[in-house]
Structures are given as structure tokens and as C-alpha cells.
Length: 295
Ligand code: NAP
Image (cartoon, rainbow, N blue to C red; front, side, top):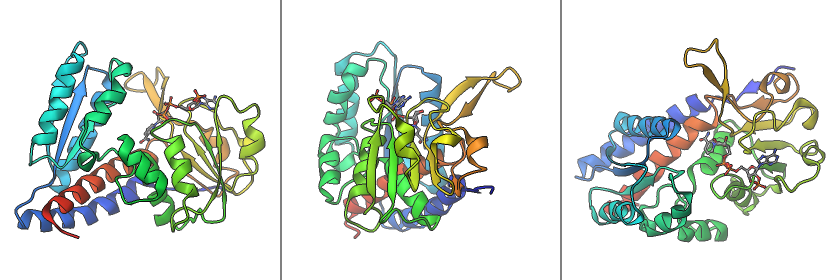
């Protein structure tokens, strides 16, 4: 069996096209959705994520404004930028690109974002509401995965989903969303991490495996059941002297071996990544609609 490739790029394009229409309507009413972006330091991966997000904004008519601070920026300088975006009426969503050079500042910086502009969905208030199943901005990667499954005709309802990785931005919110009693959830969820002695014992029982560990080959072919669905969140740079930039991107699963065994799988790149960006745009447009009083 050769697996169906879940084309996140195509699904994300579909969502962006829908959003373009929403942006047009808003703009006609005098409200152009705006995203404020803060990039601290010069990490090349963060730079390229920010560039991709700003380009995606521009393509559908979202205004974006970037502030760049050096890696040495103080806590106060960072908080001042967030405050400025909080007060700026043209800005409906705020993106602070993580990780910050000083990871110890992240909690305070995220908490400083106005929850109504928290389009990344990382603010404690957004996370709390998500947990309770209340309307809020959902974190973009987990939300993107739910939409990719839905638009690919794969329901998680009644299925056993095993998520590998428990970060606050991917694994845990995803496990939480999938366990909610609603249309996109209603799954039985197992969350594995480095404290799980035998991850394969769980992933072999899964209908859907989500790998979000940040390590190549975390999920191998012998760890999944025949016909399972595999969502690969990982983005890892591995050295490759034959590649133009000297490295290539791989996910967290052994893609070539798994595609012969599973029923559907996301590629890296071109799977979850484009969905994450699409959901950032989605949240920004919804925020602007709320600001404009559109239901
Ligand atoms: P993270 O904060 O580093 O968290 C990784 C999680 O995986 C941790 O909970 C860790 O466990 C667990 N883990 C690490 N190695 C493991 C192993 N060998 N077995 C089991 N669990 C393991 O990473 P993240 O932010 O969640 O990101 C995960 C991956 O997804 C990264 O490659 C990242 O680049 C990628 N990512 C992609 C997108 C996208 O849009 N495509 C978005 C976000 C992240 P402990 O808690 O026990 O340490």
C-alpha cells in the first residue's frame, strides 16, 4: 500500500482563498486586518518563518508591521513593543516569534499581549478558554492539524489518537482539542513524551499518530499499525552536502518507510507547516471582524 499524501499546501491555499474574500469585505467596510510582528534576534529559522507569515498576509490583503529587535534587547524594550501593538488600532493580531533569545522572558511577554489580539493563541487566557471549550483563538499548529484532518475527510471522532510530544504550543493543546466533545474532537487521546518508557506500545494501537517531538525518526514503521493516519509536525534540519543550502528539512517520522504501511501521511515540508500559517491568518481575520462588529 502506498499512503495518500495529505497535502497541507493545497488545503492551506484553499483556506487562504476563503480568507481573501473575508479580507475584501472587511476592507470595503474600512477595516484592513493588521498583524503586528515582533522578531527578536537573528535566528535564521525564525527569520524565515516570519518572512513566510508576512508574505502570506500580503497575498490576501492583511497589513503587517514588523518590529525587529537585537538579541540583546531588554525585557522592557520587548514589552514596550508589545504594548505599542496592544494600543495600535490598526493592529488586530500580535505575533511574537518564538523562541525568544532569552526563553525565560517568554511567559511574561506572552502574558503582556492583549487576549483579544492573541492570534497565536498562547496567552494563558486563550489556553484556559480552549481547555474549557469556550470560543477563543486556538493555537495555530494544533488548529491547523484539526482543519487538515477535517478537509481531508478524516474524522478523529471515536478514534484513538496518540500524540508524541507535550509542548505547550503543539502536543498538549492538540491533545486537549482532540478530547473536547465537539465536531473536530471526540477522540480518545494518549499523550506520550520522554517519560513514556515504550512509545511504540501506544502508537501501535493508534488510528491516528501525531509526531511533535522535534527529533528525526521518533516514529518508525514498526511503531505504527497498518492503515494508520500519520501527522508529522516535526521540522528538523539535517546535514546534506548535496542540498543547495547544505541541509534539508525532515519531519519526526521515517516518511519513506511509513508511506508503504499507513493509509495517509503528511509530508515535510508541505504538510502541517502551511496549515499553521493559514490558521494565523484565519485568527487575524476573525479578530479584525470582531473589531469591526462583523459576526
Ligand atoms: P518542543 O517544545 O521541543 O517539545 C518537544 C516535545 O517532544 C517535548 O514534550 C519532549 O518531551 C518530546 N520529545 C522529545 N523527544 C522525544 C522522544 N524521543 N520521544 C518522545 N517524546 C519526545 O517542540 P515543539 O515546539 O512542540 O515542536 C515539535 C516539533 O514540531 C519541532 O520539530 C518543531 O520545529 C516542529 N513545529 C512545527 C510547526 C509547524 O508549523 N510545522 C509548528 C511548531 C513546531 P519532554 O517534555 O519530556 O522534554
